[in-house]
Amino acid sequence: MKILLVHNRYQQKGGEDSVVESEQKLLAENGMDVELLETNNDRIVGIKGKLDAALSAFYSRSGVDMVRRAIERTRPDVMHVHNWFPTLSPGIFWASKEMKVPVVHTLHNYRLLCAKASFYRDGQVCEDCIGTRFRTSGIVHGCYRGSRSGTAVATAGMLFHWRRGTWHKAVDKFIALSEFAKKKLVEGGLPEEKIIVKANCLDYDPGMRSGDGGYFLYIGRLTEEKGVPTLLQCWKNGPELPLLRVAGAGPLEEEVMEASKALRNLEWLGSRSGTEVLDLMGKAKALICPSVWYEGMPRVVIEAMAVGTPVIASDIGTYPEMITPGKNGMLFEAGQASAMHACLQEFIGYGDHFRWREQARNEFLACYSPEVNLRSLQAIYEQATG
Image (cartoon, rainbow, N blue to C red; front, side):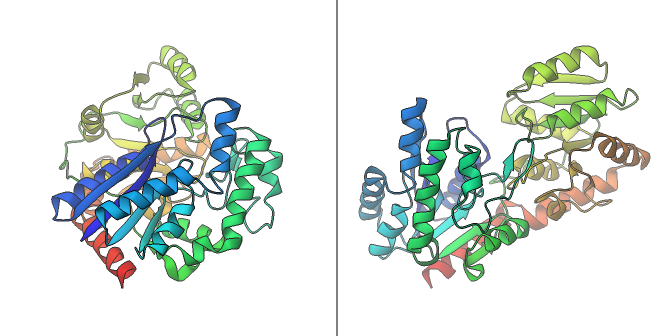
């Protein structure tokens, strides 16, 4: 089977980019003929760049021509789109339909329903635009890159494609990363019968690790929506807690650095390589994911389970599907430092966590292993091609 993967890479590499790399490698190593058509966001600079990007929500001639040429050259059985925004535009779905190539579209975020793509604004979850006709709330708040004009243009382009029927007629199958995401997408108007739930995965198995480091671990972007303020407050209020090691970079670097200087049980490691991340995870007591927004499906959680490390996360979005309290991790109320502290104390109280590590590892093998993902992708492609 020939697969054309299509993806607009982000200016700062994120989880979506890693997923595309993993799935391309997984398919190629298992006999699929795979080609990646990749563009980037590098031209989005300044006000003009933002408006040009917003306009591509309507149509991008260069993006559509690029996809047409790729289809003519590769003659794929399926075109699998990950991210089309902003350089390619929804016009690529109609181009593929006209050329009689089935389309699968992985929805890594909520861009079809939210100008910010995240359902997060002003420090809290926001679903104001779900089910509304004109999505004026997003425009008023300038949810696309802080620009009201850019948001108005991007929203108009998105609504144009809803009216045109792009998502109902030009896409054969959507992939949602979780049942939670599927529910939100259906609430927003996508046809339920076209949405298949398939989790993210790894294209390799790093193997079980020891978990003997004696510390808790946070890995990820240092941002508000990732729950970093809640994490720092928890450790400020918990001098008796074990060492917390924080690996990552982002807007809240300075706050994390200052906390690491003030608290004896907090250490900031800065950015780390993929190999170093797995080593840190493998030795940690548990990975902490304190997000206060609807995460897609964080690869760090999957990596943690792969090495047998339990995950302690906020009870929001996809996390309750991935984590079974008392089995492969624990959950606490999102945004509440006191709830996180109580949850950590309860976890520490269990003492021996070897059983937890085994169950985290088993969850990876059952739901997120390369073999599971390959079978799921093949089944989805078969459904799309009929």
